[in-house]
Image (cartoon, rainbow, N blue to C red):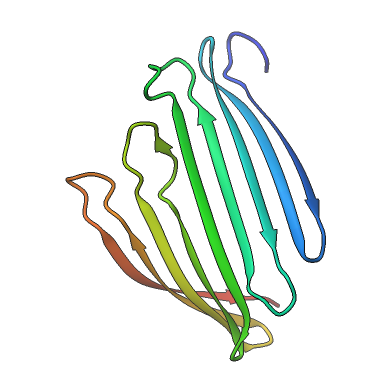
Length: 153
């Protein structure tokens, strides 16, 4: 730890949370090779006003150490909306990047729509539809359907 023989990672997070909103800021520094560090900053938050859909969003920026000046940054983001009390459950929509996008590359987005509903006191079913844009000219766009079942005892 903290010697030339090992690669170290250090992170710090600060957040503030209330019943209707929350914010978070995170910083990390990760040694990638010898004298180079990748430094990242992330900002996340949510706002959940009564009677309206809740919104959550996040943004991350990374400065990549030891690479050329035109490819030394990565960014990513997401935005989501959740509508509570839609019938017996809740519905949501989200959009974001497919992982971190390196500077100079085209952004590829992901989209999601879901509906989560309780089957009984111990089980929740969440079907969702998602779409992923192609990340390169040889990649294909993807659309799919998933179902998540959660159990609690």
